[in-house]
Length: 261
Image (cartoon, rainbow, N blue to C red; front, side, top):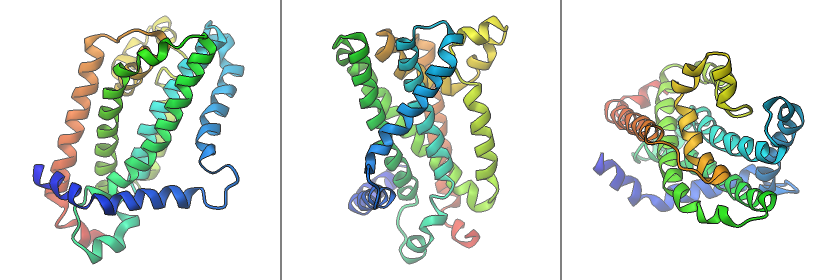
C-alpha cells in the first residue's frame, strides 16, 4: 500500500495535468465555464425548495441550506462512483504505453469531482452566511475540513473499485446508475430523517452510510452542531473498509486487468 502511494506521489505532475485537462475540456467553448458547477446545484435546490419545502415543515431558508448540503455530498460520491467506472477504460492508451500506478486514474476522476464539490461547498457557506445574516458558519469550517479529506479518500476508493469492476463486468455502470437514483430517494436529502421515522422506517437511514457522510458535513455548517460519535464511526469505518478493498483490488488485479481491456 505504501509503495503504491509513494509511486502515485512520484507521478503527481502527470495526474495533476490530467485533472487540469479534464476541467479545461469539460468547459471548453462554454460561456459560463466552471460557473455551471454553481448553477446546477443552485438550480436543483431552488426546484426542490419550491416543490418540497411546504411538505417538510421547515422554513424555506433552512430547507434550502439542508438540501444544498445533502445534494453536494451525495453528488460527489455518486459522480466518483459512476465516472470511476470508466477510469481505466478511458485511460487505456496510457495503461498500454506506460506501467504507471493504477491508482492514478481513479485519482484523476476523484480530483476532478472534488473541485466541483469544493465550489459547491463554498457556495453553501456563503448562502448560509447570507440567509442567516451571520458569519458564524466560518467558525464551523474547522469541523468540516477533516471530513472533506475523508470524503475525498472515500471517493477515490469508490472510483477504484468500480473502475476495476467495470473492466470485468461492463454493465455495472448502468446498474449503478439505477442504484444511485433509488438511493437518492432513500437518503435524507430533500426531506429529513423525521419523514422515515414517522413511517416507522428508521432503518432506511440507519443502514444508509451516505446519510452519515451527509450529516458530518451538514450538521456543523447548517445547524452548528456536531453529530454523534456513532455517525463519525460509520464514516471512518466505511471509508477504511472501502480503502482496504481498493488496495486489495489493485494488488490482486493490476497485473491481469490489461488482458481484459
